[in-house]
Image (cartoon, helix red, strand yellow):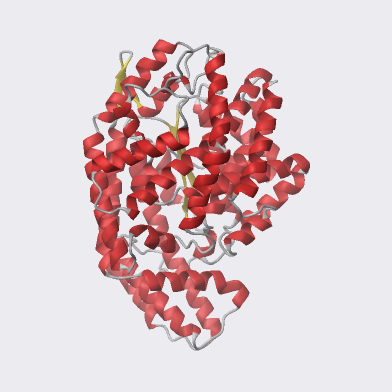
Length: 579
């Protein structure tokens, strides 16, 4: 049965009445949309005030288009086996998006021309202008069609992943449902589940490798068309990474290897001893090391929603009220089911300025963390909903992820909503261990992506070999992968960012370090930390990245001088909780 929850997405009232876009416009009608862009381009701009209003009219049009695309994407990912939903999203990607990219470049150039005639408030528009200058430098019409092809391949990846079902224990199960068995105390059951899932994923290996090769070829061409030696350098510029580059990423990789990998290996050795195993295998890393039953925070998704609402209310009553409104108005689709795309995300409906949360809950501890995480993104969207300029309602991803990862850690003290004292302790230990692993996994994925795009023309065999080398470098030698080389070689296939959002991953590492600083601040003064957090979220993307961190009381830094003390604090806390 198809979900009904997202049928309400078209019915939310606009955040404010439209001033430029007609109320009755069909936002899938290309000619109507082109007419509005032409009106903007033809407008007589004769003063700075008119230029400011022109920017706001442009924001209104782009917000309406973004919302239409977001709704189509949400509906497609909620049911990837619905051919009509898939086709509607495909039509939008093939028809509307390419045309708007051409017009956006023309509008960008018009804006820069008008800046030569009229001066704008530097403090207000400096970030906006910097981004537009960069986009103008990067744009070439030759890339529009190529980028559309990549988007369609991304849709194909969603379809492949959404269709994967595993026959296990007499029942057809989703990938997310299979993950539950890896938490069970019976080692034989865990191993059988791990192998069943891995073997099913291996069946898609050739298809996914071929799909990725097509993406790779297109992206390499996109980078060259824009005048770059490789796609990596192009992508860093297009992501508006003004405050760090590839060299800082390599510094992050090296620091993680020196400071975090040894701590992770220490945790794994302790687990191996606790489980009394001669060899720690991949199916032994998620289950409770003392053989206790998996944490079961809720039976029904309604209980997950109510529990997280209570946690958000304890963190801040206004956040609790915001989440309650989301739950009550159809802005959550949380249940795992056949045909649903994998993973979880928060998407903002830019015209009504409402957040939507998508995930695949199956009743495990990780589900609680995921909803707290996506809730942080939702609060970020709501905090800057007042901002009239669309670009400023979306912050840089490095700080967007502080909003979500920070919320996970700020909410950590309130897990008694779901657990008794002992299970709460177990959940907190698991979370801090996951934080450590996240930093390592980010280094692994990011280093892999750097190699991929620095070495165009490589073969699938070469890519496999490099992946295995990097996985060994960052994941140590405590886990025994003998006999599982094929399964290990395709672990990266599960990381959708590599397929759909290249180089969008280092942000998680940068943000995790920011979130840990937020956590440390909260233990000194929780009320002030929440106030700083919310104030920083309200800035959206209107300030440079280091200033957003500073507004939240954090340092934008991912070198050893930040990583080392944070890891020592996490290790100290793990020791304290473990007793």
